[in-house]
Length: 111
Image 1 (tube, rainbow, N blue to C red):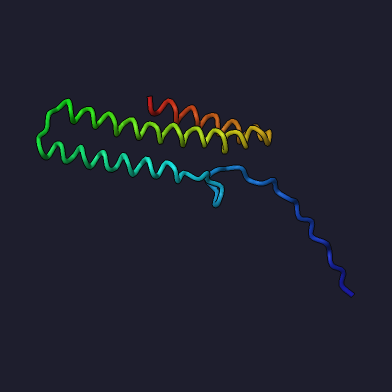
Image 2: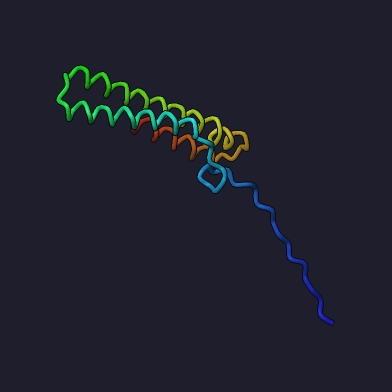
């Protein structure tokens, strides 16, 4: 007669990384803003092709930059509200530290 040993399976804590399948926040609203910025950039290219007045072109460039900045801020806020706050709530010091470092790099890289 053979005896079977029970296999002990340790439950792993849920992974909290945003980049995992199905855990990314939804950015559909930002897609609408990006399509608007895409249209603005197309209009800017048309203005350049038509050799329109420089200040008019610059106004449109600033409008497109503003739209992209708005998308950037919205995605960054959602990342903080979801991924970063989840890491902090679960008191995973290593993961929280990684997320804070990630934020510092993201913010300092674009200033």
